[in-house]
Amino acid sequence: MEREAGVPAGKLPVTITYLEMAEPPAGPAGTRPAGVDGPAHAVNCPPAYYRFLYDTVGEPWLWEYRRRMAPERLAEILADPAVEVHVVSIQGVPAGYIELDADKLATDGTMDVAYFGLMPWAIGRGIGPWLLDWGVRRAWVKPGVRRLTVNTCTFDHPSALGLYRRVGFRPIRTEDKLVDDPRLTGLLPLSAAPQIPLARRP
Image (cartoon, rainbow, N blue to C red; front, side, top):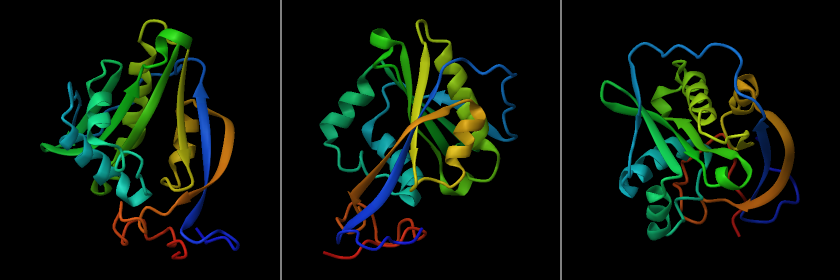
């Protein structure tokens, strides 16, 4: 990703793609990759454990929203029965997670794939497509669900958008934004996401 001319100091350009799935997957469920355990439902997930998952999975892709979230707010989200965090592991070591949010289920039938990703060391083992397929199917069995939503952005893994489309999501809109570079604000180390050039310093 090249830094665009004219972007203000300290800012990064990003394009967010919003997707939805209007009907359940038609084919058979994916096959669990060899050696993978779970997904295990992290019931009442402790915020410290969640932050370990979020920070480790998200650092290569500049995930920063929940890094700057107040601990009390994060704890409130994780305690909400509408939120499910499901973790996969290999030989007892967490390898990734998927987070489903049913907050809008009662009002408009929407289930959201809030977060989904793998630990850096687990990428390339076939876990991602299977875990996403598993999460999508779990979401669709919720009573009253009429559609699933997810979003991805140009900071994410370059295969992310294609994977969502293969599972059955379709893009419905995009949004171009300028965001603070979290590496310059101290939320993330300067070494994070080396594939994304640092913003110009203010």
